[in-house]
Amino acid sequence: MKKVICSLLLLFLYCGNAFGQQSAEALIAESAAFLDEFFKNRFDIRVAVIRFENDSELSDTAMQKIYQMLVSRLENGKNILVSDLLVNFADGRGEFNLSRVDDLHYLLDLKLIQNKSKTGLGLTIFSRLQDKIVAVKYFEEALSKGEMELLNARNFAFSELGFSKLLEFESKKNLMDIQSITGDDGQEQYFFYYPDEIVVYLAREMRLEKSFQIKLEWTRPVYPVLHYEGKLLLLPTGQGLVLTAGNNFSPAAKVMAFHDGQWQEIQKIDFVPCKYLILNQNPYLVGGRYEEGKNYFKDKIYFMPFSDPANRSGIYEKKITPAMALDFSIREGQLQGVHLIDRSYNYHLFTSEFEEKIPSPEKRGASLAALGGEWLAVSDYSRTSDQLFFYDIQNGGQRPVYTGKISGEIQFVSAGVWQKIRGFWTGVWQKRGDPERFVVQFWGKRNG
Image 1 (cartoon, rainbow, N blue to C red):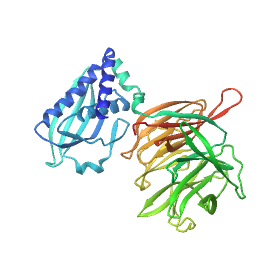
Image 2 (image 1 turned 60 degrees about the horizontal axis):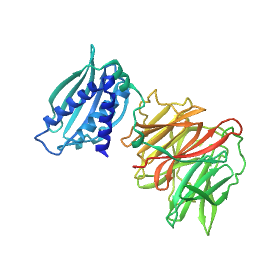
Image 3 (image 1 turned 90 degrees about the vertical axis):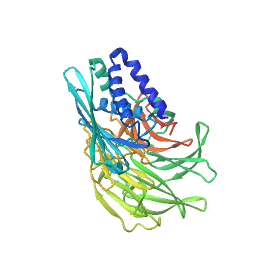
Image 4 (image 1 turned 45 degrees about the horizontal axis):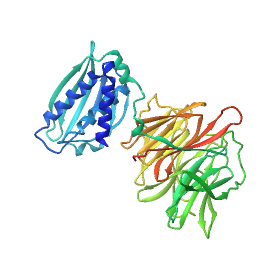
């Protein structure tokens, strides 16, 4: 896959030659050649870029492209083991995951510099073991206006390496969430959560067939809402399969267990569970509480011990920003980060210690979902022509991967699985004359 990525990037450069793109290629090639020469008599050298600053006319997007091109070139080196620690680019500076620095032999410091009509790349090599700078080099090329515009263009992902729409079908309105689980027979069961029922489907090739439904009755008070919002969670436990269902029109979420061939409500909890995670080797449900009858969460996150589904004691809470959308990235059961969109449609990222990272003013949205600790999907906030942005979050930040265009307004995004392909479900409201319709889509990454 690394060779494929490198080949595609080189093809991208070659096709851009008419716009002067070969200057950027030369800048990268010179830098990579210098590093290859510097490390030629060393073997299994672990190297990573840990700083990248911009003092040129190029944008953050261009910085990311140059970084990716350089890393792709270095990955083909025989004696260099490159670690990709990039988390994000913002305000002319790269953000890197420095928790892995102790595993490296050499650290690279890059800086883009504007020098009249030319753009330069400064490179500093620091030896972590010797604790000193061992090399400094400067490369310079004349980048034309057309080349800068091409580098600065935001849409640069390859669809073959990103997410694509694998499934689309029409559903009845007010669908709030979709979750799935593999049954004892190895077949996927898909749970569609509506205000008054949960409909369970089985997959038959590229279509869904209804298997059964679970009727839902909500005790008073029940709040009138303009838009139905809700979260569904499926939990295989030692006592069997458990599901939780919470929403914005009832103050209590249901906890239901499958016993004697039927679903039975075993308790109620006063927040909406979003994820199941492990803290201090103990299982917890984590989630938020909707403002009554509104489509946003209040300013607290709740953690409830969940070793016994019938026990709701020991809940504790964390203060956070009120959120239009909320999700948690989980890796190997551990909390990695908290992702939310506030009431002004700005995106925020909090660490597992609930410390907010500096938000990027460019990142806005309406709905989001995290797939494990690997991928994040964020919708735009358009009503007729929406977009779905996919980010790589494996290093604790957000690196853009791909953008999908969507006709209509995205109502929700949920992480899930379709035919053993991991990805994201979207519920899309489309207004094409009369009648309006609600469409379900699944976006997946075929190569993992």
